Length: 237
Image (tube, rainbow, N blue to C red; front, side, top):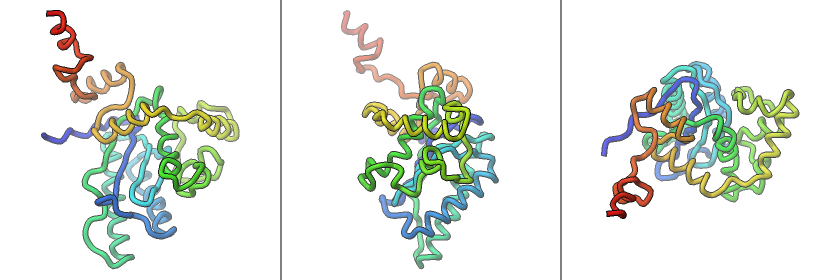
């Protein structure tokens, strides 16, 4: 089956995931995390991409960002990935690939999913049982978004800014969102959309994306799917 073309629209946030090859580690020391974040800031500025949230796990990364130009995300991830592979190979005397094929990404319906995807990203270390609370993990945007520690590479999205009229209020409101668990079905929605290159959003948003890109935003219903109209019609025959 042919790979789906990437969906890139300026002004629409994307959830990006890049994993280590064969789930192997990508970060080994604190310096590695620092180097990656420094280059993420550099390339996000170069390619005009606003980074809103991120987490650097041992063997993969999650980024929530909005490109101001159509190909901004692709240019950012490719440049950052190539630089970081060279850095790791030179630092640790290794050779070969570091990342697992193409990065994964999905367009995000801001009104309905932006803040939940941001929380999903920052909760990765908790789900991985590395920490009990996201505040305990140093390599994520939670430190900025909820705790108020300035991380220069981050640019707040309008959805985050709408939480309050001061930095303190926004941080408290954002932190308060963590009292609500993300439902299992929402976690599955986020993962499926990202891994399969579909759009994460309401039906109206998906239709708008399809009109703008000329590409399906969600999988087609199978003929035998119990939710499909064809299936329902056949049951009446």
